[in-house]
Image: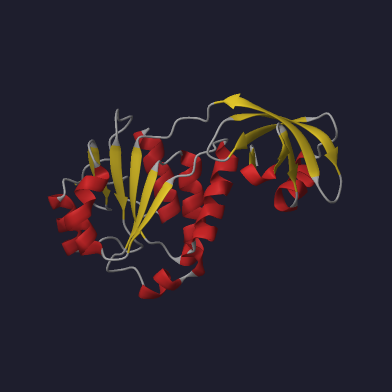
Length: 235
């Protein structure tokens, strides 16, 4: 992790935090920090700064914490994502958080298996944990906003326009014929479909909602690869 992300409950006194578990293990085994060393830290949902190691053993890490730096700004990007396979979902959520995506809606689609919606990986605890991994990687403290839309048509026809707001609306679809634009300015809503792509009725609904279809060329990419390539191209 490139940022040691702190929670309010980690603070045992003003300016002093105590960590155990995964973060303690990482600092001991990866950073190999010792008393007096400084680490990059941030408060979840708040500022970043530095943490000076006061004590470190097998049971806990104690830090003297100074915060005051703002986190990096989010991209002005909304991500409309057909729910991926459960084994892929964790990677996609962590990647989206590390890339700076501001808002995400996971939506149903014809080619999304119904069983995916029953996966424990959709539990709030798990999705939050994956976002945290992404924030730690990218040195950010602000969680993306996540929403679930289990019914495609009602969301696309009744809520999508308000959720997307102003800006470009791009629909990634292999063979669209129009290349994805580069270095856009301002807000954008990006729709990425499931493995196998959107079906015709879904494409029509999104086009009616103001989306234009774009692609990255002739290659068919996995969801997590397409997400990184599209975001990198757009911003």
